[in-house]
Every structure is written in C-alpha cells, then in structure tokens.
Length: 160
Image (cartoon, rainbow, N blue to C red; front, side, top):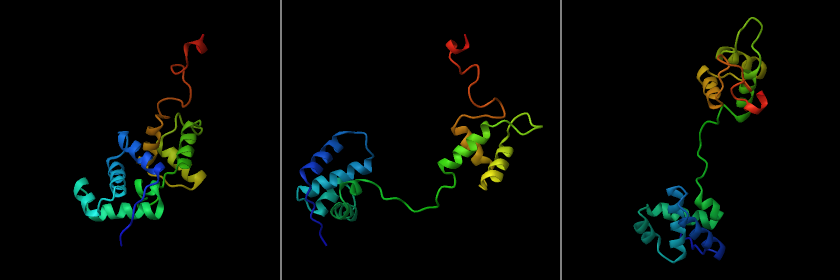
C-alpha cells in the first residue's frame, strides 16, 4: 500500500528550515529528508537508495506522516522498558532528607541513614548506589558538610 505524501506549504517550509539548522539528531534529519523527497514525487525505492536507508524505513516514515502528522514522523516513538524507579518526586525526597539535621547521636547523615529514612517515611526502597547517584547529581555530601548555604558559597557582600 502506497502512501502519498503531500506536504502543506507550512510543513515544507518547516522541514526545509529543519534540515538547514544543524542542531538536530541525524535520524531526525534523515526523516525530514525522506519527507521532502517524498513530496517531490520520488519513489520509495529511489529515496531509500539516495538517502542510504532501508526501503521499509522510508515507507514507515511516509506512513507515519500520512497517519499521524509531521511531529510524529520526525520524532522517535517511545520505547518499551521498565518504568524508572527514581522519579523526580523520589529525588526531591532523598535530597530533602539529606539536607535535614542528622538524628540525635549522629554527627552527619550517611547514605545508609538516608536509605532508612526514605524507606521509613515514604516506603520506597532504594539501593546504596541509587542514593549515591542522586546525591552526586545534586552535588550533595551531607557526611562532609552541611547542606544549604555555607560561608564559602555566600557572596562577600552578605558576609560584610
């Protein structure tokens, strides 16, 4: 089954601008070129040979444009996989706990303590490495220094 790609003037203009601007992924640029060539009435086989893609790839992009529009034809479809365990909400909770004062009898928060607090308060079990990665991503080291503003991070005007 053949899909007739007829680009609207707006879509053609957007695609031409898209291909001239070199800040896009190579895959997206290929898809844009497939659509532009398809609008020029080139055959799927000729497009595939000229752009060094599989005939099936060119056909799928044409089909996706006809069925779902320009944005869907250029973008990657979501891939299946296990959902992320560490959501932004979990990161916020870990960060907040890391910035709390340590429990009585402790000098500083440790990764093990943060793990226990997250599990106890929010019933989310995170591994040692996961907590470590979250803290590193936010440049937090609760076992070395206090979280928040330190004397070194404050502008000199505020210290005077």
